[in-house]
Image 1 (cartoon, rainbow, N blue to C red):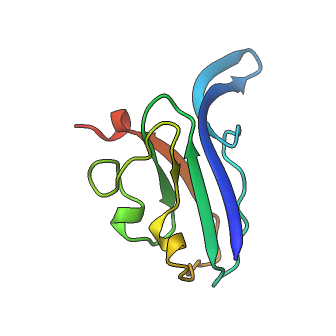
Image 2: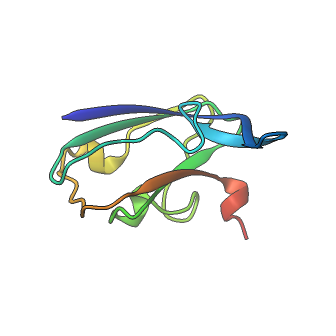
Length: 115
């Protein structure tokens, strides 16, 4: 079983030599950390929300049920500030079927998915 601890937080990101913008980061990084998996791995991912608002994670390229990956308040419950979340597909201990490729994750707050 591979275990990953992810913390979503607000911070600053230097997008150019002299330009810094506010950003959401995962484990203090933009883009977030690399999670190395092999096809068939069993994975446990714990997500902590250190943002001042609720958020969700969207897993680009992974084939997951909507309630584990969709937008907040539409297909999945948001992770409230200061709370931990263990995605359902990890709690069940089922294998993730990962085609060989690069995937990425992004944090999405309610403002990003509303209207």
